[in-house]
Image (cartoon, rainbow, N blue to C red; front, side, top):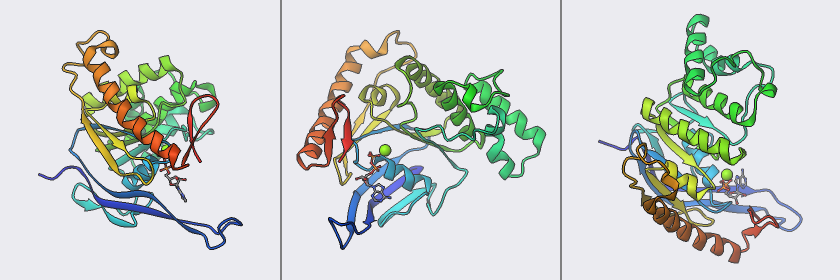
Length: 281
Ligand code: ADP
Ligand code: MG
């Protein structure tokens, strides 16, 4: 039985425009020779320094771009474009501001030609699943950041995709809302059996959510490590984040990641901002 997602020797290069500093242009290698299997139903989290190719990788899985070399397969088929088998949730909510919550969720279902009654039913169901019952008629500007991201999740789930691809979806939320959504995402994942590939900047978030944490090297992104997270029965643990095992995994991932952040800094790829966050240089 093959894994649901199979990346084989994936390299992705971008062609750079000519600039005054580099009149011939050039190429930038964002991902190098990356191979990774994600079995059906797994919750995989992916961390890496800024600029290590996380978003590039998600775009490849989503079919928004094609690898320079290597192959990206989903369910044994080469990915050649976007598809309803893969829902994507971005960091920015990407909702249609002129559509209500319900109409944002039904959007894709309209494109599929599903009759109005059915798509409204399905959208209401999805909105209930993400805790937005009663907010169907609100517009995005009337919702908090956390609620907007719930709408985005409901919208991706409405197609019942086998795979959910998430690119730092909770990064813009406050800590409390983030933890709440993490909890709910796990609940939805358990209820639906969807395969999840979840990119995050947060080590704690990666360890909390992931069955495995993939750590990317600094640019060009290679698979540096895969850390299996075994926290026993997460649902039973009252305060998982202060558990000894949790602390151990967090430290392990932190160590792997910080080696790479340091390498990226030394290579001049990363600049540390005054607030302590990193930015790709
Ligand atoms: P991450 O999400 O890990 O921060 P990205 O995947 O966004 O990193 O980017 C990886 C590298 O590829 C960065 O150096 C970025 O500047 C570069 N890059 C991404 N997209 C493009 C593009 N369309 N053209 C040129 N360079 C790109
Ligand atoms: Mg990114």
